Length: 388
Image (cartoon, rainbow, N blue to C red; front, side):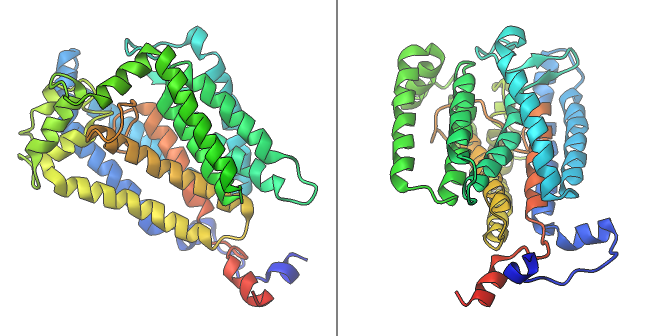
């Protein structure tokens, strides 16, 4: 019945898993991810030694940890790329459920590490941030719900997923972590739009988001302080934004030279949230443009592949993953150049951080798995056969 409706694409019977994986994976996107991780290690060698010295560790303590966490992230990414969409969906449901429970208990057992926001569990040897792992799981689960709602006699998946997104955003805002809350709402909005949402509903949601931001500004000192700093006509040169802006300005087109930058000695988050400032100062605009090009290649190639996909779940979940990956990178770099308020968001695969690296590996692994070329996977064949 499936072949009568959709047609079929020839397959290679008995083909081993690895050759089939290599033939169907998006090799360009995968290479871009590996290059981004390599750039992250290069920048980590420049940005992390001052922090290690201040904390009494060896010069390359954080680089070694980044290699370890990054290695786990790359292995995780490759493992997910081997999976089928059905397996991805099942694991996403399990991962989402576990991360959701961890997020619920965060106010009781979490810590803020002196940063004013309870976002982490302290594990002794490291930390665990539930919101990082919640994102890929939520996106896949929400994509599944929205796709199911479009089926005949399907469940009200759009309503369920919207309620879930609002509840998660509320939990994140209470930490407070408004950046991750906005990412969750953005991911849902993108999938809802691709799933055929009326424009007026999206406009209403955008209006509610603005109202929520106003309420947060009035009731959260943490949120208000960041907004006031962003809107201020003058940038305090002793703040992280001030140091970052000066570093980017000093770097120019080609940078001041490898190891010659000074911002890493002043920025406490030079190896995480403001890693792009280190790249701009030491390597100049040239490296920043390369980083932007790598992210753009991953996202655009993924979206073009998803445009040819017939399965609604794959198309929705893949679009949500790709756009979230892109927006997180855009937010991180926009904060460094003061286009957005500071949000405490890492640059995927480049910034230091165990949770962000491994969760990024899961997200991109899911994306690469969903964008693999599969039999009966392109909508173009169906349109040609149906004469549309």
